[in-house]
Image (cartoon, rainbow, N blue to C red; front, side, top):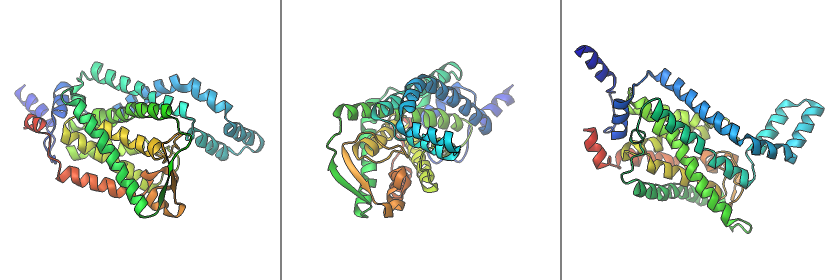
Amino acid sequence: MEQAQHNSQHERKPRRDLFPRPACILEAAQSSRSHPLALELLIFAAVFLCCAMIQGVILAIPSCMYMLRSEAFQSALALLMESGDTAAYMQAVMDVMFNLPAWLQILNLFGTLFVIVGLLLYCARIEKRSLRSMGLSAKGAAGEYLFGLLAGLALFVAAILLCLITGTLKIGGVSEDFSFLNILLFFLAYLVQGMSEEILCRGYLMISVARRQSLPVAILVSSLVFAALHLANNGLTPLAFFNLFLFGVVMAVYVVKRGNLWGAAAIHSAWNFAQGNLFGVAVSGTSPADSVFVSTLSERGAMINGGAFGLEGGLAVTLVLVAAVLLLVFKLPPKADFQRAAQ
């Protein structure tokens, strides 16, 4: 019996950690059973697909109604019926999906709330994990979140400045027809969307993997999965995939260093909102329906500004994210109270 307990404790104590483990990971390891990495990923895939299906079913009606009324979709359908060109039809459908009107983009972003609810219910009911074990401790949440919003905005502005300096992006001024109500709704919707992806990839997946694996493995796995979730996005390139992976690393290290999910969720939301609805740049291949500023990307500077995929597909974002990783790893000390808990 004593030997079995010793083996269980040894199994849950990964090696080769870069920094002290925050209390959220320690609590997750104590409150629920860890699994081998392959099984952990299979469980993650099943949970994610269930949540995505629920979200998809609920949003299917308004999305289908818009698609059927879309002139681009009707033209593509007519082309398919006449020529049988399936590839052209699918490309047209993708173009419609990534150029939705403001109301439907906002609705889809708010729809990620179902992913949040599904993940929280699964972790609470099946894995018996608390909110704290997912990085959602109430202590200091407001301050962490507000700082994260500013940090996310600053990170993206840094990428914008690199594009301006290299002449690969021009800001033409304030959009003449932007809707303040739409911008406000987009901001609120991105708060939900950013939180959903952080709970999914960091609060759930990374912390679950870290129960048995080392922190570097948990960070790398969760970041690769995060990037892979964008494989179907319009205009994805190898550099864009690498940048998405880097963004995941930045978020994962930030969660580990701060000991909670609030700041990372805020950074994620502010980054996406600033990209699409502040500066008018495509968000991971999705064109914004409304923005405060009008930005023009130089076609010859696509390697720097990311081209059709948005800044996330260019070297400007690569430089910003690499700098962010280095600063987080070597300059940001672990949060004191979580450091004590880890020790």
